[in-house]
Length: 201
Image 1: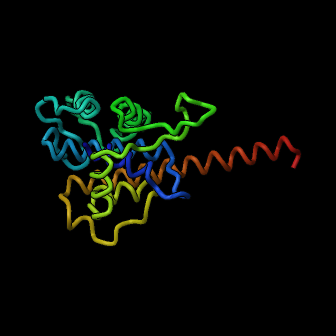
Image 2: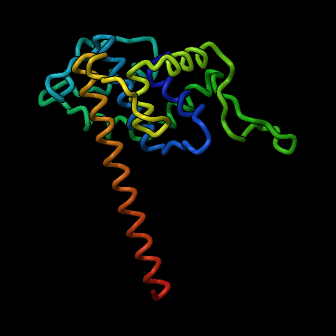
Image 3: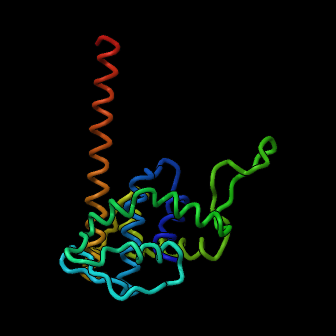
């Protein structure tokens, strides 16, 4: 399992009242992919730009897709540009992939035997691994989960626990999620103002 898969499991297992915005989750999943690709030495960072290494397969369809989509010519892509480009629809892609593997089940009702209800994680080794990683406070997963609002920011200084490249990615995820939230708030205010005009207020 990958960090992105662990994050998706963590998001679905989030406490009630900790609903995760799909756009936020997609950005964080793209960041999780970068962290795993750094660990696999499939890329390095020069400042905040992604420099791909040799192209090879990692045995995970979505991570392999991430590797093949890296910009391989200078000027290389920035981490934040990658998050916005790669993150588009990524939560749905991961969800569909894990559902096809049987990692996700749909709650069935007597009146709807097709299983199109709320998605739930199967009781599997993957879920146990993600749960163990979350409860142990593993710093990368903790920061990504906090960025999408699943739980509070870790109290430990993450920069002391991971290398500089990973810190750069985590900071970019936080910035992108904050920027997306600002866009949502602005649109909400504009929509409310538009509604008020139509009501004659």
